Image (cartoon, rainbow, N blue to C red; front, side):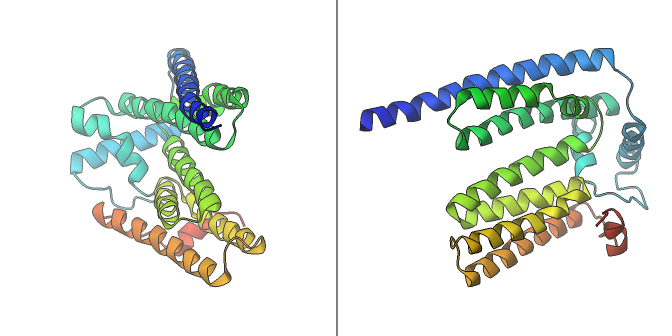
Length: 248
């Protein structure tokens, strides 16, 4: 029995690795062809390019900037460190992030689904989905937001099954990074508290512990946002502006 369990544990990661490589190669091929046949970028991509160019020229964030800077800082890495063209560098970053999204999706699903066929199908969907392909081939903020959101969801799932503080903190950090890419990441605060509610209803966590974990998640989320904004010398956006971005 022990030998069979050991065989399952050693073979499954190998199959998962093979599925990840296959789907990543498939996703890379599709994205390269997409970049060749659809080279024109969206208006937002060009607007972000102008902001990045101004940021690089002045050495600081442009005045009156209305979006959190994390996603644009990630997109400008090739230009800042390698003097690579801004627009092409943004696309290159999103191509890499898009492939990481495929791989991470497969590994998250592989943790909870033992059926390799289901994981392979999900990986193929992630590699070929039109929206994911488009985001990977554009200089937009969506891919970085999806990347951090996916990591936050993965650690939320681990927290739900194990109720471990380290998973809670990692989920809060990645959720805040998603928020720093797009304001929709704020919804992770609501999602986490909903998870705590259901864990309490199904008696997997005591009420006092749920309250403490909720406070800890919100604190880690907010602290990460403040630290990164401080590092970028970025003033916090007013609450009126944040709330105006959501349609409750």
